[in-house]
Amino acid sequence: MSKIKQKHIHNKYLRQKKKFPHVWCPGCSNGIVMGAIMRAVGELEWRRTNTTMVSGIGCSSRMPVYVDFNTLHSLHGRAIAYATGIKMYKPKMDVMVVTGDGDATAIGGNHFIHAARRNINLTVILINNNIYGMTGGQYSPTTPTGDKATTTPYGNLDPTFDICELAMGAGATFVARTSAYHAVETQSFIKQGLEHKGFALIEVISACPVIYGKLNKKGDASKMMRQMKENIIPVKSFEALTENERENKLKRGIFRKEIKPEYTAVYDKLIDSLKPEDGEK
Amino acid sequence: MSKTLKNGEVEKLKTGTVIHGDGSAAKMEVEETEVKSEGDYRESPVYIYHDWCKKCGICVSFCPTGTLASKPDGSPYVKHPEKCIHCEMCDRLCPDFAITGAKEK
Ligand code: SF4
Ligand code: SF4
View 1 (cartoon, rainbow over the protein chains, first blue to last red):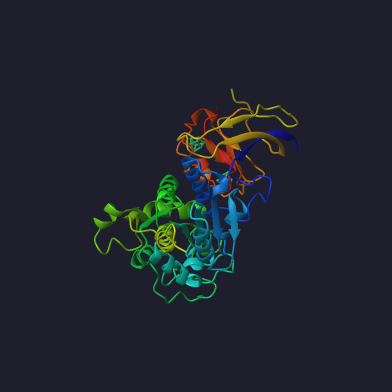
View 2 (cartoon, each protein chain N blue to C red; view 1 turned 90 degrees about the vertical axis):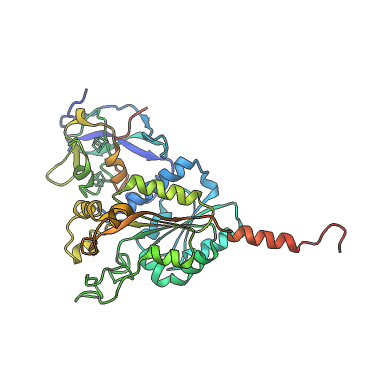
């Protein structure tokens, strides 16, 4: 076969020379979300050295391997705990957490709700693919009832978590949902989440065509993404639907955006108030 | 103008930089690399980096203008370079950073 000089695309936030092509399966949405994150950070013109990405374990949690920020690939479910530590020690550092549905809401469920309750300035980008991909296809708290996973071969019995409702219930001050198909919106929500002073959750519905898709006969990556386009609809259109029409539909948009005291700021204030005044011993 | 490379032909390509339409995105630089591939356009509005492409077919499915098409083995190629409108859909939806339709600067 002939050799042809071909153009190679180089992105300044990628660890270009390492580990590419990445480990994710063909058609997996994780790469799309990673692109959206890099675009959002690029838009904010954040310095690589002052941006940290923390993750736990899982498919989406492989992301810190590929991006050229400060990165920390931590324990299963504990990403938010590590990120809290970084943020408390260095409040000026911009810290984001990339996590999955199983990582954040099952194994790390407690870290998730308590970070939201404290309203600490972290941006959690939760990539929800409805299954534990990397560990072998077990069902997760967001696997739809009745759907198959390797541990639920006859269909899942559990009702599912609505992650956005969970975060709002716990007190998160920025909550949004979108899908990987809506890549422009994903970029915009991530940007707004990164700018938000407080706990921000961006849930991105993603496609796992190789495990979840195959087990549940959802078709290939393009087909799954077309389904996202049809079924994940803006809040307004969702609310106009009747109860029956809402089946299989999911709303997307920014559900909450409010300003409340931020944890590291409150902590700093406390420390300041305890410092001895001039002249005092 | 776009031409299809013939078997055995090696062409020196210029190195350029593409910046996304919204001005936001991480700046992308286009470098030359040598890979084995046939039927690629020498000069095209879309760059496909076959070493990273996993042939998932998303770019071909969602290109709104029909610029891209799949080869029998599933790998994408630029079928109608003149149709590309630089909408960056392929670029944003490719999970593997293997294609860009952003304008060259
Ligand atoms: S930039 Fe848009 S029109 Fe051009 S190839 Fe990509 S998807 Fe098609
Ligand atoms: S979307 Fe990317 S990985 Fe998929 S076929 Fe197109 S260029 Fe290849």
